[in-house]
Length: 575
Image 1: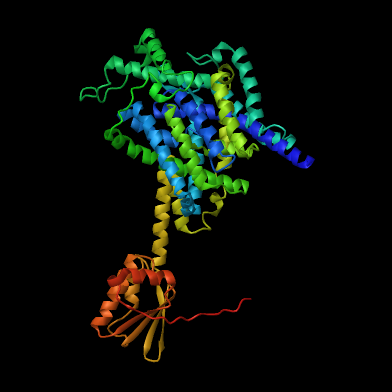
Image 2 (image 1 turned 90 degrees about the vertical axis):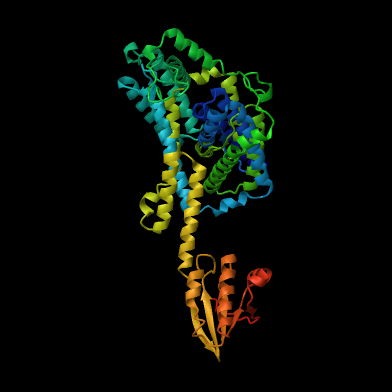
């Protein structure tokens, strides 16, 4: 009893501490994805809270972290840009309903169709994307109103602090596992950054910046200023309406704008933030989309893509966490949980979301294996945003970047670098294709679907070329013993195997080592029987299994052949 209590207490402690670590890592991601989607930062933060909390409670994979993601943001940005943010919330709600439907119909098991090569390409591409996404943290707002790389002392300090964070994460577990190394690294580096920002020489601080070490608050403010400057420049040049005269004209630099213009623009962007979430139809900031068929026509394509992207990324992450923890999640329950979370998120004016592979790996590697870790991460995020905003604002981006770089190292399948010449070339092609598409277009769902399609085509091609037959005679009957599946890609090889003109009067095709899979195969059998009838000969099919026999019988007139009831069973000696 005492042993069980001690074990339970330890797991609760691990879940709580790892959840707090993940909460810190969720903040910059949610803010960044909100900017990608073209919506206020608080929308991304509160979306991460709703998605994370509800998914952790109702989802099918304990320990998996969900929130606002870049894959969803890429889809949302088109909807918001074309139709406006008022169409976003109904689209997210419809997305959730579609995901719940998938779970209720128990279609989550379709994740089994994802080949291992696609999985490797997915995780490698995602690792590269996560790594490239950290480059923005090495930038600051330049004098022209755009983000530029840090220079001199700020860049050197940033690199040193990132390296220190990674070193603590690697070395601390060798000394103690009482505290998650990621959380300890964030706290230690935050204290160092606080001292540097307070006592660093003024000539180290980039022009126009407040700190030598960029914090989460600096990142948010810089992005707000960059957006505000861009909007103000558009207003100055009247580029909001594209015409042949101004379509190639570049926005003016910040120096061409007055301080009053910049301050007003920044204030207008900040004014869109809301301290607490509310039901979107009660929010005076947004004009409600009309409840008409026209609205459904607009949001349905986006909702379908959002649902597909969210489920594919969530189920892929679930499979990866299953492998790491050597446990098994429930894909169908995860679909329902994610769908319910998106429905609630949409009603509260959120951007929707799905599983986050980076934060999930942080959680699992920090010891978080239960549902409590996901709930603590979501609640911790809300507390940080609402109550402890001054505390979270001083966390340096260097600490969070270091944590994410360790996630990249842990996510990337390094074994693929020395096994690529030991596996089939087709699998290497699929891995590179999926990883490349993920890196170039940041669309994980399309990358996975593309990999599955290519792998399926390769599989079909290989099996199409492996159709063959052993030929033998039984008295005056010629028997073709088929080997290989008979389906759309192998019917040509099947036709070439049989010779109706020169074959004897009675021919039997033995399917003991073959199967009839589709309508193309049925049609090929029917045409073969017609050719034999035209020659005045008889074609028999033997050793059809029950499924193939039912398929041919159901085809009726489509396949008029003689089905022999002969069955030959082969007994092999078991050694």
